[in-house]
Amino acid sequence: MENLELYEHLLNLSSVKVEAVELTKDKVTISCKLSTNSCICPTCGQVSSQVHQSYNRIVRDLNLISREVYLSIKIRQFYCKTCTSYFTESLDFADANKSHTHRQEDFMFMIAHKQSYSESAVILNIHPKTIERTVLSLCKERVNLSERYAQVKRLGIDEQSHKKGKKDYICVLTDLDRGTLVDILKSRKKEDLIAHFESLGSSFCEQITDVSCDYWRGYISVAQHCFPTATIVLDRFHVTNLLNSCVDKFRKLLRTSETDNLNYRRLKWILYKQYHKLSDKELTNLQLCFEDCPLLKEVYWKREQFHHILDNNQKVEVVLQKIEEWVESMNEELKNIFKSFTTTLNNTMKYVANYVKNSLSNAVTEGLNNLIRSIRRVAFGMPNFEHLRWRALAISN
Image 1 (cartoon, rainbow, N blue to C red):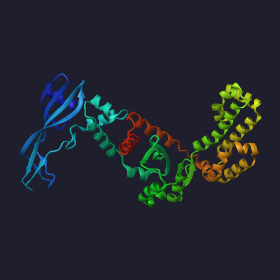
Image 2: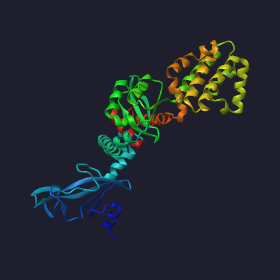
Image 3: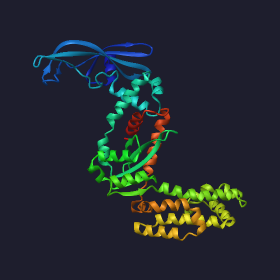
Image 4: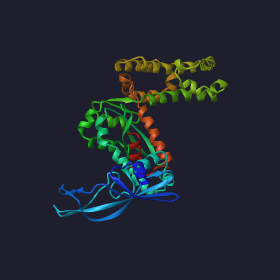
């Protein structure tokens, strides 16, 4: 096999004929031309073989054994006798006005996945702005927003801080069935969310069967307004977190009291666990604390009773009744300890109880929130919202 044929096999571009190769210490320049003798006129669709003029176009390709590879391609301009127009032949492996091939673009996208544009630029020896524009362009090409919105049935809604300390929150929408991002919105304000969902049309609002969110009243109001036929479910993680915070607040009071002992210091994570998930050692420590403080035992088992209601019932009406009985059965001491939880529960009891219909959770959204944070972390904050949005949507595709 001759050297030029070898390079043609390495390039694996069927439309390219290699004419010469120039090797330097860190660079390979491959001079080539397209193998076709004619081209179809984009205006009239007729085949033309009359060349008017030509020029050399330099395109960056994938590296070859640590050397940068550049294709010097002879591009021809044709003249069409049928419609008397001039047109330039195109490349099927590189876009017009781009200085790199499609596979080089894909490699740039892959390298920029887990690091900043500046770090990627050092690895690839390409200007950071070139990588930035290429990655953003590929992200937009690979993300079909209309298709994502058309597929979602069970919607997850959550937020995260875009700029720490600035109260600048972005809203994350997820497809809970497919475990993917649907979209990221620049604002989580009630009026902005309502305007966004209404802009998608009534057909989108009618297709949503379930909405999972946290305690923030704005999300509940938006769901009630935009998705009147959907079931609103408060994420159990947030319900459990608020319930556990009441138990932990009581534990902290015990630690500061005269009855504090060494067992209370390692009690926090034991109290957070449900009883049937505790190890033998944890059960022993818990029992010692119960003997020291009988009220702690009442607090813990009251928390367990609430979990039992959600875990062992499937009808919302039954759960609502049992939650009301759970609140009414508390004595004054317990009511004071669980006051913050029961106050919130009175306003959201129906949405908490809806969990038992199909055990819908917003865990998918929480996981995708971590994906967005990881992009921001490796990209040193990613202050540009549109860049963060498109990168996160493309990666979660």
